[in-house]
Image (cartoon, rainbow, N blue to C red; front, side, top):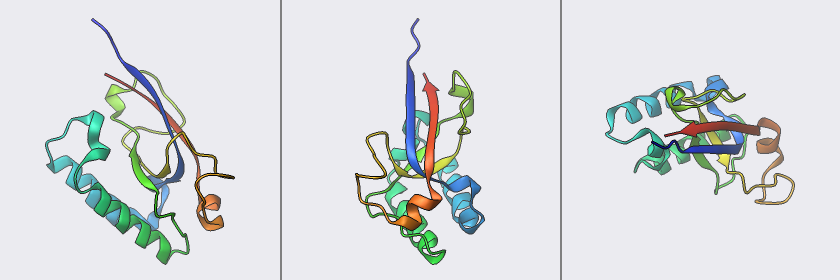
Length: 125
């Protein structure tokens, strides 16, 4: 028997901490609960690009210019995490994966950088 562990991370906005997108986040959570998709690929669901754009629009209304190339990242099911990290499970980050340098690549607005931070988590299967 083997166990696969992945270290994950994203630089972006932890949506679970924002009151201005709570209703949209609840809608995303309800949608994810209604589709038949394995936990390891939740952020690859067919409607995720639609939700990404809706979050981008909602945050723009709060003065945050989210880069067009930002994506939604799911922090994994809490039950499948072999260890605790600073970022909780079952959360969503709107931003960029590990191959990001906020000061260099990709170009990001100051409003986005100010609201963002690094989030890390571990998943296992």
